[in-house]
Image (cartoon, rainbow, N blue to C red; front, top):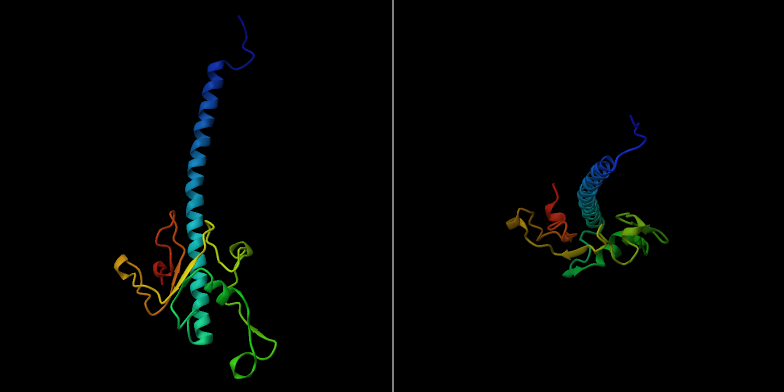
Length: 164
């Protein structure tokens, strides 16, 4: 009787097939996890920018860009991420001192200054005054502002859709 000293071709093919199926399932599930992580990270960014705008309004009595109508991708960076120099007196903290920044972000979000980028690399859009989003289940931002980080993977991602 002959003794077998290795695996047969069928055993090897079955093993490689099972490993291929497991690897494919792992890749598919990681794509979904990455997408959800990007959405949550962008949601946290919008929440931080919203809080920074509120802090700016507390300090100056108006939102960034007000009273003019603003809709761009640079106002937020200039107002929240760059320290503001003061002239002193009653208008500021004193000569040589600064206010802010009102929102500190990781360097990769602002590497293409003066814009702030979401997790897909697109600039975050800011508009003042905001729009009425109550028809789509969001907030009425007409007296506030809109911070829009929507993308193909995360439609409707803005400060009007945050849980309050």
